Length: 226
Image 1 (tube, rainbow, N blue to C red):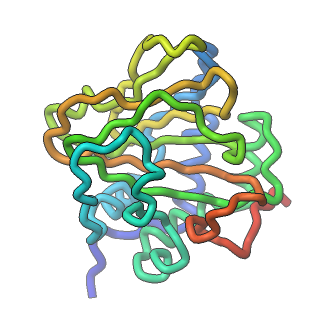
Image 2: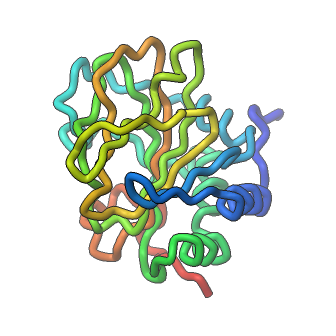
C-alpha cells in the first residue's frame, strides 16, 4: 500500500532539523531568540497538515490555551503509534545528538528533561494575551505551518519588557523561532481575523517536574545527550 505523504527516516529528519539549528540566526532584541528556516523536511510538514485531526471549535477564547486543555493535541505515545509522521518527528527530536546540539546552541542544560510537542490549529476568534512561558519549559520553539493569502499576518506578536508591542514574526511557512523563558520574554497573538486555519507546532524540552505527563511524547524516557 502506498503511504501518503511519504515518511522520511528518523535519520533524515534529525539531520534536516539539526542543519536548521546550526544555521539559525540569533537576535538579541527585544530578548534573545533564534530564527530558523526550512526547519522540517517538506514531507513531515505535509504529514502533519494531513493528520485526520479536526481543529477544535472554540469560538472566541479567553486569551489562554490552558482553559481548553482537553481539546489540545499533543504528540503522545498514542499518536506516535497511530501516525508514522508523529513517530518519526518525535523520535528525531528525542535523539541524543539533536538534544546535545540544542543544549550547545541555546546554552542550556537538557539532560533529564522530557520532549513535549503540541500541534495547534487556531480558528477565527483565537487569540493569546501577552504572556511569558513558565520556567518549567527549558526552551520554547514555534514552527509555523500555516498557508494561504492571509497567513502573512498570523505571526507571533512580540513585546518588550514593558509589554509594549514592538513587532511580529514573519510566520513564513516552515520557519521557526526559539527562546528561553525569562522575565522579559513577552509574546502573544493579538486578536485579528483568521480566514482558514492557523496551524503551528510548539516544541519544548521540559523539566522533570512537569506535571502534565499526558502531554509528553516519551513520558518514561528522559532526554539524554550521551
